Structures are given as structure tokens and as C-alpha cells.
Length: 154
Figure 1 (tube, rainbow, N blue to C red):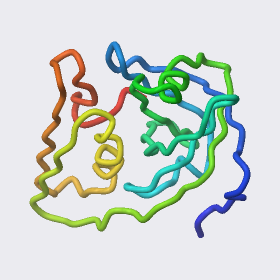
Figure 2 (tube, rainbow, N blue to C red):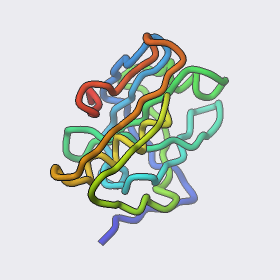
Figure 3 (cartoon, one colour):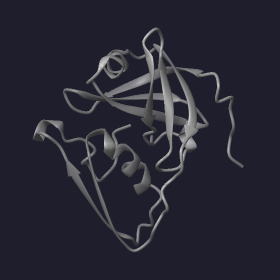
């Protein structure tokens, strides 16, 4: 049974850990039982107090009951989210959207930047016997992240 929450009001969570992925990308880890169980391809709305709300794919975490958002500082809202520190709070709503159809066998995944987030989550749903190739794109070598065995550091 899928966990449900009020989709009209954000649930407030505290950022517990920050992982610097690149000079402009970081992953914010927090406890949330609902978002820790989203399907690959689903997303959440993230509310930054006094700034705005933006859609974000939910990153995997190796820790039970934890979820994460991987954000690149770019616009006003994403830069503010990127700038938050451990102990600060954000609001989350969701999950929203449909999940990917999970295939088996020989699989090619192609993504770049923060668009890798749903693909990394998808990797955790594939079988060890699947023949998976993940192609990662980036503007520069310094902006490549999630390359260690297709797993996040979180």
C-alpha cells in the first residue's frame, strides 16, 4: 500500500546531510518515509521558505527512510535550495507523476546533469542480470557526478 499525504500542504523536513557532487551541484539528504519509497520517474514539489516551489526528482539514499534532492545552482530558487545548510528546513509535497515502465534485459540509459537523478533511482529497480549501459553527459569533466558504479554518495 502506497503511503499518502495531503498534497495541498507541504510537509516540513529538515536537511540532515549535504553532499557536494561538483562545484555547482549538491545533494540534500533528509528523512521522509513517503519520498524514500517513490518509484523511478516520480517527482516531488520542493518549497523553499520565502522563495518559491520547484519540481525535483527524488534521489535514492542508501539509508532507510531517507530521501534526497540533487540540485544545480542555476536560477533563483535552485540557487537558494543549493545554498541551504544542514539543519535548515524545506517543504515537500508529493510524489507526483507516473513511474517508468521497468524493462529487463539489455538496457541503455542516457542522461546528463540533474536529469540523471531519475535514472539512478531506476538502476536500483533493475535486476543484477540485466545488461545495463549508462551514458552520462556533462558540459565539463568537473561537472560529471554519480559516476561511481552508477550510485550516489548519499
